[in-house]
Image (cartoon, rainbow, N blue to C red; front, top):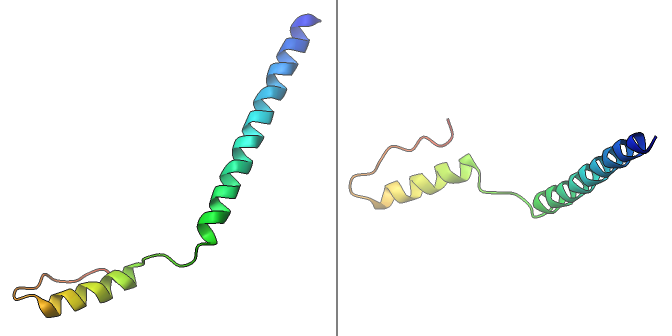
Length: 65
């Protein structure tokens, strides 16, 4: 009987730790998403084209593809 209790307690501890980890991960994802838009491929394409206009020998820009 004692063995079953130990197995059950270990199982519940694992479930509790996994739940805590999941909730922390969820909070981090919410804070990441709430910070707003990120640098995208379209931003990279626009930046590349602006830099290419300034260079003597520009490299081809292919961010939006």
